[in-house]
Image 1 (cartoon, rainbow, N blue to C red):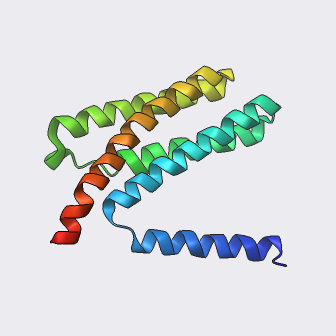
Image 2: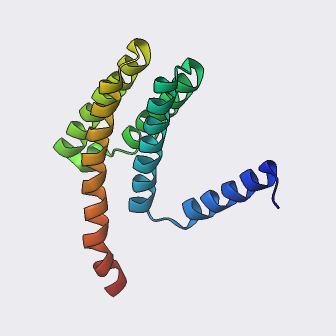
Length: 136
């Protein structure tokens, strides 16, 4: 039986391996998945009244949105689209802050819905470009 430390190390190696072998689209999708997982965790902690864990989960989601998704935008090549995404990510960050400060589960739901919509676009882009990449 693997102890907790061993299981954690095993999981980290699996995640690191996934990240190292991922293409840019996969990395972005992984960021969306991570943000959604953090928001789900925050909502559970909010319902349980665990303010410290809720705050940590929301901080993780904000970090992913700001330092992952928003930081990955290429404003030179992305033009208007990257500007619009940047504004959406900023709005999501503000929703997450509101959720944390006011224990507002609706703000978490709104942030999750926005990220889900944008993430679905990335997943569709990845699916549509996969046959092209394989044929190239």
